[in-house]
Length: 378
Image 1 (cartoon, rainbow, N blue to C red):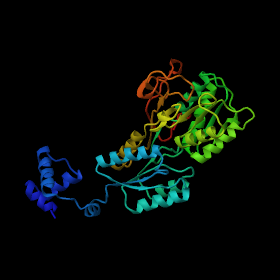
Image 2: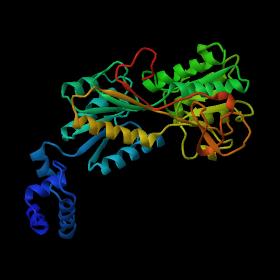
Image 3: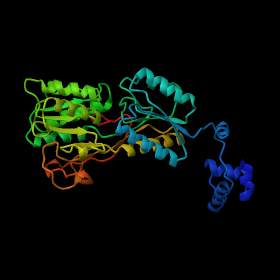
Image 4: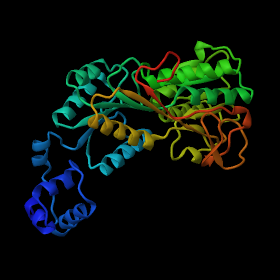
């Protein structure tokens, strides 16, 4: 088996230079760097990661704790994390906390004991023990998808939630709906709270009263959404349109509607938060807010690498804009292919149609401090 000394002799450089090239610890002239890389390829040299970690106190590994990895949304986030980590020369260790605060704490501790350099975590609805553990051990961490608005220790990367949800509501209201139901997510998650806030903002913008009976929790999963939809349909005056707050709950809602013999959009209109690969295969095709899942994952890795390079810099929250993919489940006729920004800003590509011009607004990526000013989404 080739050693670092063999690589150094083949490239005509010192062992220290080979180390700098492989570990990125010091700039090396381009032609020297190439000579080392050519020697590595020719000799089939494989770095001893364990020995290197003992010297550098770094394992070049990242821990990822994300629940419901089987969910297509989190699967795409995982792909974004994995690609960005690999490009940066990091390996990935994955744990599923199952959205259980106690299991979450244990999963993160196990990753920490594997000596990962830092972690990317989608926190549960009750992350107190998690935050305490990460803070006590000073683990470089980026929170993903769900954010904690009242902390200033950790970087966070997520999608916009309020304005895209409001846009779904105002669109349905623009089609004449006056009773719009919301199948909301698991209580306590920031995504749930923000999408409920967006729903209320949409009602207010459309001049509609907020009726608490029209908001029912589906607990972010299919079975819960089926029960929540059934509860909405059993109201004395049921909704004529529904917004579902994630892709799993969309499936549950459709199951409940089918069981009651209702068709979309003839009997009830439907819009959903979270687009997924087969959303345009349904009949009718689903009008949905698409999150930039892979970019969320990639940005989380970059935020963690920035934190590792500069541990003392202020924590930041990064929000990415969503896209409204306008199809036919809302009750609009099928027209041109295309998509609109979730704010209704215009075409953005994808398998739907452009949003009507009455829904124009602006939404942009923003990088905020971890403690935003009052009224700023985080």
